[in-house]
Length: 310
Ligand SMILES: [Fe+2]
Image 1 (cartoon, protein in one colour):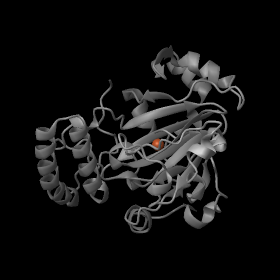
Image 2: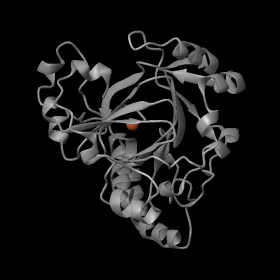
Image 3: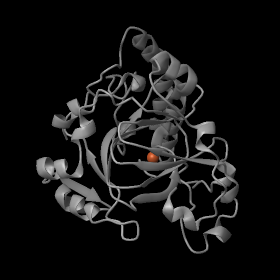
């Protein structure tokens, strides 16, 4: 997950719309209601009680990770660290002098019981044996993000392969800026990487990206115990408000399958593998209805992620 923020303050901005109008905060809704109100219409939402059964909430803190998992290797912006080193720098982090970010840990086996995939995020197709793994070569389906004040990723984007993104906040608070759909003409989309905007913070950003201020956006804060649902293709950015830990994971199911297929095929073409793009597209388009039938009989509902330790 990468993420508008303080750095984008140097980009042209528009008046932020009141968050309540577009991004609701709800609790106690059933899965059917979630699907009908949010997943199918592709409306972002914050589910304030989605993590009520997660042992991670309350237990996961920077101090706990430092004590229990401080020796785990992590990579931040291409450099190798021990998790404890990053945690120390993030504890000392300020908005003016932020620590290294983003720092992500691919969730290891012993952490998985603390963060079970909840029912709103099912079904999920990644682990089905008929779904090929190679389109996900550059994707971590489940990551734990560590951040400190000022940590941010100043790049507008949507999550790769048009997967839905789930942001589960287990500690601290994170601010997200979400752009309403259908505004690609204002966002300076990178033609080579169509999930990324070219708009980067710089002193001359207002001259370089003059249309950006017209884009309608909404800023929300996700707090510990809450989960933000970002439907596939939602342009967004994120910023750490304090010392915080986020579990981020994706979801592939019937309503974003067609978009995933288009993106997976386009990625093959961009890599020059035209033959593989052709058969992959044909195979995945045929597979979609098969998986839908399987899901009617309970397939793709593994709350334990179906992941193995790397
Ligand atoms: Fe993201």
